[in-house]
Image (cartoon, rainbow, N blue to C red):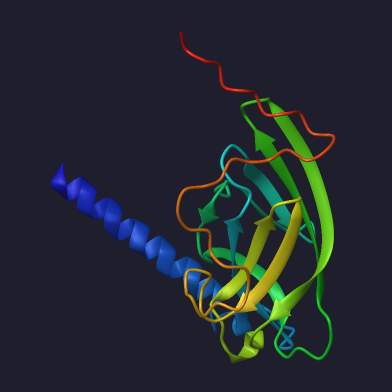
Length: 181
């Protein structure tokens, strides 16, 4: 049993190493266009309690899901291509779904937004981060360090207990708690 668990850990570590290698400097060899580089993607949920992002895409190519309602993971899912040197605005189209289980509401959203670059992708960085913000807006950052750091230049990482989600006009109202007798 212990051997099987240890083998599973080794295989998981190997898979993560291969994933990281595919998005790191070796991406130069994988893509013939030396003006681009593959970078890992992460997402951070800022919505609050009771709403999640089951699916999102970047430019209809990168697809991921399971973003936490409050917080989220760092970059690690591979990859999107970005220019190595930023010479002007880089726009991306983010499409995402939100789901509120308390009212069984699945909504689709779309926004075309600029990527905010704290560093050029060819100069480093920890990854591309998509922030799902209240009001069904998004902000996209390429930065070093990660959103968990107090030095991250983008939206602050959500900490503490998640506030309840407040529905926008046109969305189903949140159910009211019932009083116990």
